[in-house]
Amino acid sequence: MARRSSPEVNAGSMADIAFLLLIFFLVTTTIETDKGISRKLPPWQDENQPEPPKIKQRNIFTVVLNSNNDLLVEDEEMELKDLRQAAFNFLDNGGGSGSEACSFCQGAGSAESSVNPQKAIISLQNNRGTEYGTYIAVQNELVAAYNELRDREAKRLYGTTFVNLEAEYNDPKTGEGRKESLKEKIESIKDLIPQKLSEAEPKG
Image 1 (tube, one colour):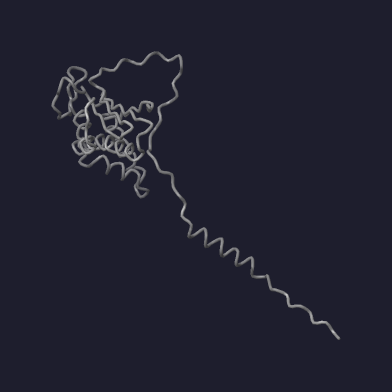
Image 2: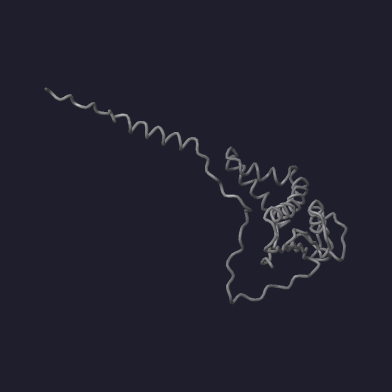
C-alpha cells in the first residue's frame, strides 16, 4: 500500500508578513523625547585663571528653594505667582549711575537693587529634597522675567517681541538673508539683557 505524503506548509509569505509587522511597529511606536531645561553650560575654567571680579550684593537676586518646596526670595517667603514680577522689578530697577546707568530701565531706581540688567545676576539655590516640578516651575518664572523684559525692549527697538524674533529665526521657511537680520536683532537684545541665572550646588 502506497504511503500518503504529508502536506507541506507554504512558508513563502512568512518573510512578507514579518516585514509588514516591522513596518507596523515602526509607524505606530512613539519614541520618548528627552525632557528638561535647555541651558548652555559655561566653558571649562582654567585652574590658573585669575579671580573673577567681585559682584556687588545689590546686583544679586537670591532665590532659595528648601526641602519643603518653600520659596525664599531675598530671605523672605514668597508665593510662586509673585516670583516673576519680583525678578522683573529687580532686572528693570536701573539704580546705577555714570558708567553703570541703564538708559532703558523703567524701574524704581532703588539704591538697594540692581544697577543695570547687564550687571544683574539671579542666584538660585535648591535643596536635594526639592521636588522636580517645583524646581522647573521656579526656573520657568525666572526665565519668563527675562523674556518679558526682552519682549519690551524688542518692541521698543524693532516693533515686535523677542519671542517673535526667535520664532521667525527658527522657522525653516525663513530665508537666509532674513535670518541674518533677525540674528543681529536677537543678539543685540541678548547683549542688552543677558540672562545671568546662576545655580549653586544643592544643599541638604
